[in-house]
Amino acid sequence: MNIAIFTDAYSPQINGVVTSVLSFRRELEKAGHRVYIFAPSFGGRERKEEGVFRFYSIPYRSEMMREQRIALPFSRGLAVFPRLKIDIIHFQVTHYVGAYGLLLALLFRIPAVHTYHTLFIKYTHYVKFQRAMAERFVKGISRVFGNLCTGIITPSPEMRDEILSYGVRPPIQVIPTGIDYDPHRRVRNPEALFARHGLPRGRKILVFVGRFAREKNIPLLFEVLVDLDRGEREHHLLLVGDGPGRGELEELIDGMGIRDSVTITGYVPREEVFDLLQISDLMVFPSETETQGLVLLEAMAVGLPVVAADKMGAGDVLRDGRGGIPVPARRGPFVEAARRLLSDRDLYGEKSRGAREKAAEWSSRAMTEKLIAFYEGAIRDYREKRFRGVRPR
Image 1 (cartoon, rainbow, N blue to C red):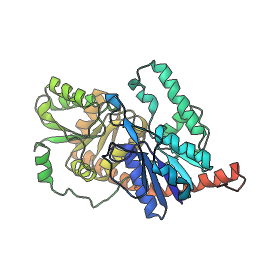
Image 2: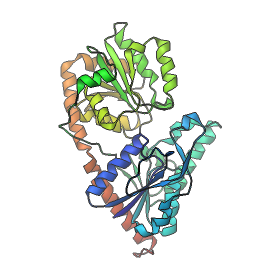
Image 3: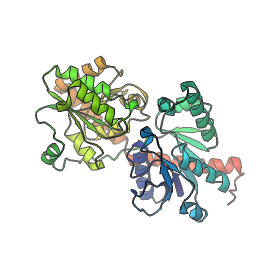
Image 4: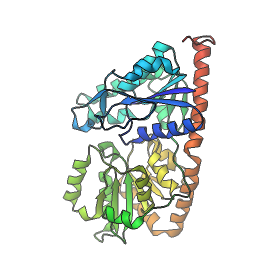
């Protein structure tokens, strides 16, 4: 197949959508398919890649949206698109580039599928107009984009149920992003890693990996840290990532007097993320808006147990009890679960073994096989139902 992926989130950005696109692209190409990426430019920070077409873009003026881009319909990819003989268009976000992909699908009569990565209704606190109106807008846009597709992908059953409630009618398939599972992965240089990030020896390291934004609920982890330590400084919180909420977090850290017990790495290379996970003792993840909990599975892939909010994708990952403990996103339950895992060696070992077993089941290869079958079904359905077996070109 010749596959066109339209995405408003792509390298050099670092987030869950980018991870998903890169993972599926790698595995699709290994399986012999041709994948073309259509994405925004990032002010010259992007690198040139074969098969990647960039739309000229400009930044948002809002500080909270500084990592996003407004993609304008100017790209050499539009000129060459007819020659690529695309079999299916897969757009990732209902935003500018996603809209261009959907428009090309309609113009060239190509089946379009969409992955609904983000529960946008949980992000309406970023808009400046009335909240109820913003929620109606989000549901309406999701319904319009979704109903123009041949099929929809969601990373979790809960997300599927959510968009069904919006009135989205095409078939919906749950296909999580697979993880880069390597049972032989080892930390390359632990001493250098501790030194580079100024991590203390002798303390239990609690790690969070993700974007620093309000919906991630990171301040809860500061409260958990204080309760676990009880003034003894036996634990250290490692925050791996960055984002628009970093300034507020830094102020809160100083205000609570826990600067010596918190390390913020900023964005680090992907392999270093796995290294940091391996030197940590427990992943703590308080976000209630995750659609699939991909970073939890990456922690599990190195045998790291997890305590996470029992909501959305994170809750789905942990609900069977393997690999960690799902809890309400409140101070008390988080502290209790973390203390149990860190003090009970047998329980910790059980969760660590379960984590590795579960991660192996979510490999990127296994999930890509499901995606390929979904593509083939969408193409077949499009041809049979809309063009009676013939696809005009």
